[in-house]
Image 1 (cartoon, helix red, strand yellow):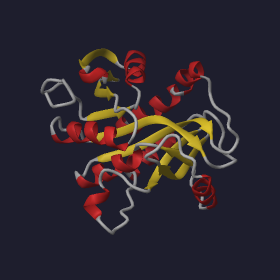
Image 2: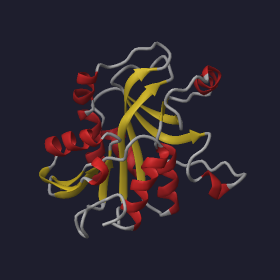
Image 3: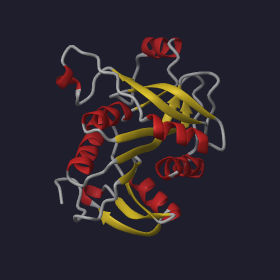
Length: 231
């Protein structure tokens, strides 16, 4: 066990799907995994391990924001040997051609600052996705999917409309709160990582999915993640 993950040795699979919401981890495990077992519930952050088409998979919540994601990803990699980490989360669209329920594959993730910023000092490190995972996820898509750069914010209630304007101007597809740190950690430890994001709201129009619709809409994203990991 680690400080934040209560799983025993051997209870975490090499392939981990990482939703932010622990209850979404439970929903995904119950829906997509066979023989899913609760392996961690430390501090209410749920983690389940089961199989998908015979392949071991762990689905573990990470909480909101880069600092929280960094804790769980570090421990999954360093203490449990995770090799493939796929974030399955929500995002806010920044481009007019992207609609609610569309899927965004984050090719790269820009950010103002992350827990890893101090390591690079004056350098602006550009973390990117694993191309193999990205290409397989794209091939598995059954609905609208967009590939490109995203912005990982360290605040949720952000009032930087000027920044949103520049992000849109430079082709940034969406905003969320975890991916830049996940990609940085995957580079540091030579692991495979990808963020697959479902558009739950639109920054430009103010549209948003009701809570009940999010669960149904996120099923396609989980399927894409599993196909990317194992095909």
